Length: 226
Image (cartoon, rainbow, N blue to C red; front, side, top):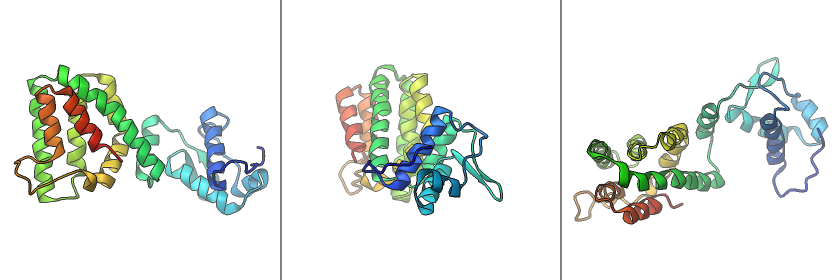
């Protein structure tokens, strides 16, 4: 390992994190391998132990490393699903929030366009049911509707009849749930309005049912703004 040159604008822990993750991604550190100890990493990289600990802790939170008491730290066997599940449980930084919003838009926007064309009566019935369930939850437990919210967006992806879009959305389910949980209050829910279904999710459902592609995409875009 080469010592970090501190030329980047990143913090030292971020540089250590990027370096070790790069070794894992490239296969230099493979599943089951024991990585150098904290003391060895300090000497090899020329950085402080707290910086090493911070970087290793992040990699453990992501499910890439496993610390074994009295033994050392090992690279874990990790599928893409495992990685995302662990990442979803870690605290999101501002950059992560923006990027997850962008990822959701990429998947959900195409799902909306396809749903307008492909959704059948059965699909729309289920989408209506998930919208009504969400609206009921908003009324009964405002601010605690993450799962109902997720199920609506998941059903929207099902309406697209594209196995791979649905597979991708289910794969990032943990990230989406965390994203929704953090931003549920951001969505406009004017319960005092004149409409019996004032929530944007109901408006999105109606736009899909009425095959109004531009309106549905505009509602979704506004919903996922950061």
